[in-house]
Length: 124
Image (cartoon, rainbow, N blue to C red; front, side, top):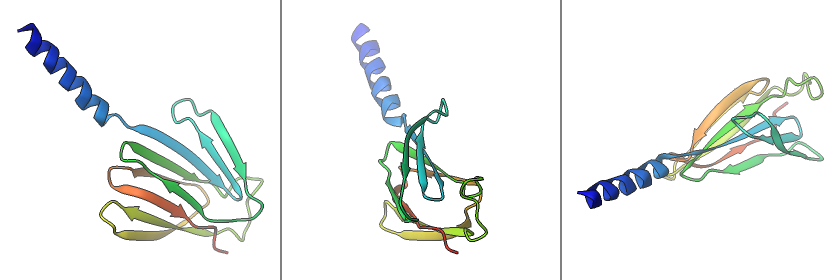
């Protein structure tokens, strides 16, 4: 009986470990890309490009990627930055894309369905 309980406990632990997902968060604001901790809100890494460019993010099956587009920030706000195209590469090989206003939008991408996304530079 003890072996059955121990085996059941181990199997449940393995099952719930597989269900656990890491959450990666990124904010894109003009030329800046800010990586931060989802739970504390603390910024881990800041990358600033010399010019506006596309941003590509890979997503593992056990990850969730939260992307915050914030081109309305006071330091990057411009009447020229209007919208961005987001390309979504699904696990089944299908490419989807959509356009969105990039002023202040947040998106969540689940690695169970998506392998990578590309956030194109702003369209003027």
